[in-house]
Image (cartoon, rainbow, N blue to C red; front, side, top):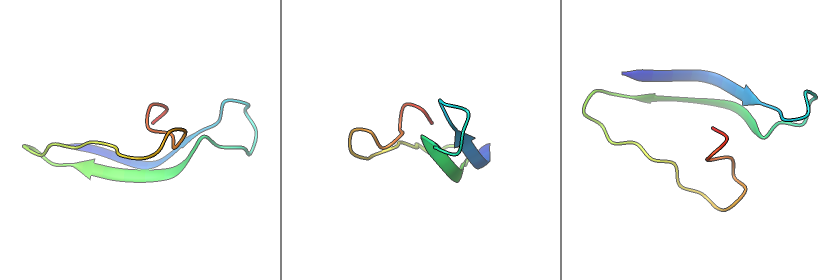
Length: 45
């Protein structure tokens, strides 16, 4: 299992976050993908 809790990322080291407070779990045997528009933070996550 993969478990991510309260993930944050800022490129500028300030309060402007590219990714803010993301949590998710991927269970054994599951297939997981991120969907969203351009600039939503998929690659950064």
